[in-house]
Image 1 (tube, rainbow, N blue to C red):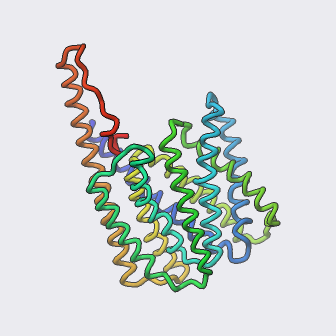
Image 2: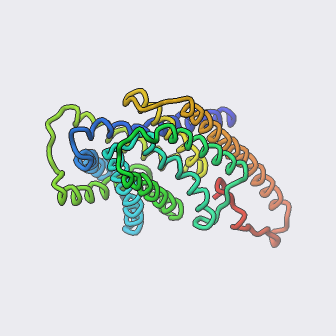
Image 3: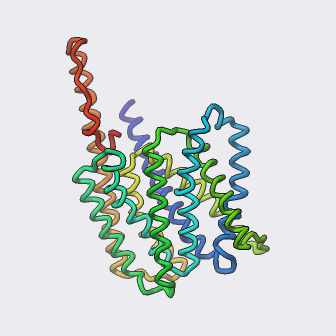
Amino acid sequence: MSKQIGVLRTMVTVAASAAFVVTWSSGFIIPAFATVDVSALTLLVWRFVPLAVLLVVVVVITGAGRGVSGRDLRTQASIGLFAQFGYCIAVYGAVAAGIATGTVALIDAVQPLVVAVLVGPVLGLRVRGSQWVGLGVGAVGVLLVVRSQFGSSAASPLAYLLPAVAMVCLIVGTLLQRKSSVDTGVLLTLTVHVTVTAVLLLVVAGVAGAVVLPSSASFWLAVVLTAVFPTLAAYGLYWWLLQRVGITALQALLFLIAPATSLAGGILLGEPITVVTVAGFVLCGVGVGVVLIGDSRSDDRSSRDDRNSRDDRNSRPDRVRPRSRPEHRTVEAW
């Protein structure tokens, strides 16, 4: 029975991971269509404001916020400030500036390496050697994918700073989430993040004069799509997978965002897909596989160590207890 449960758990995780890659990639493709006739700010306002109202109503009805302290809400608001507001406004600005969607998606693909470097000094964790190899292979694949698209955009060189800003915002939000002890559940977490983003977008759009009511049916279709897929589905899966598979495995999945976005951009937007692009796809897949296999072996090793540790403790006198060494914790065990 336990083996069947393990297989089911793996299947759920794989399905959720695939859905995460697809829905997160849609956040780059949909704005490329929707911001042709309207500003990126206008789309963002209507993407977040109605959704914030809906989520607040759901939280009130379900009581999901009952018993949550003001400190926890402030912590989630800080995370949302970076992970949703800062990230989304920079990504939409980059897409609206004309940068190829696959190039913009580089922010998600570079992030794993930056996070892998930072988890040591920031979170006190270590990344295993096999995981570093997987991250490195994936990074090479990403560079090949993006290299095949450079030169296809007429965007200003300064516009390329926007993806970098988005990358920094998502990294800060992710590290804040992992460093904090706050556990508010996916529904309340999304509600706080979306509400904070909606309020800030209203202020920014109001100052910029971008709070308008477009009459185009295609615009409102884009609003619904961006609210459901890149916001509810993608961000919900992001925070769920962060708890489910750990920070290193989740960051490895982000390597698949750039290839998926480039493939969709090539099919739907006519962006270039070359032999170099395909080679990058393959390397990204290999890199993710190496990281996830190493993660799985680490989990098995940790389980065996836990069993051995319990057996060892049971065989010792009560007065003799081994002390744990926090500095020996790995990313998976953290």
